Length: 148
Image (tube, rainbow, N blue to C red; front, side, top):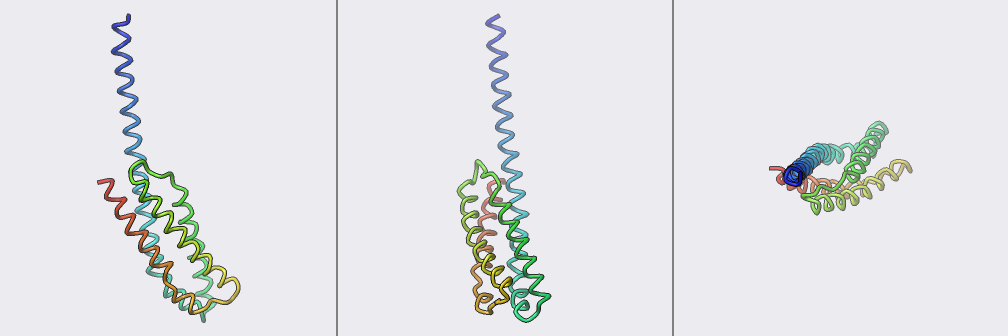
């Protein structure tokens, strides 16, 4: 009986550890896919919103569009920040979260200015928010390389 139990136990242990390894790979691939989608959205935002922000100074319709885009990006950032840190590339995730938090501060500043009706051209020219989002894309490119 003991001879039979030992191989069965060993086989079960190997099978279970293999499942955990496979699950970790799947989690990493899911994270990379979500990070890639987020990076694409962030890059689109960084490319489109500066012109929209300039138009928003004099055009109430553009200001409403800008507010919508800012709110959407804020939600995307918060959703990305809430993702579980991957086992591989956790430091890169923490870097993205740090940059995202800086971007959130800029978005909140824009939203406050829009709500107060004081969208200032000087605020628009402060492109740190867009540079920060560009840096996010660079780090996510590094994350993508982890999956290859």
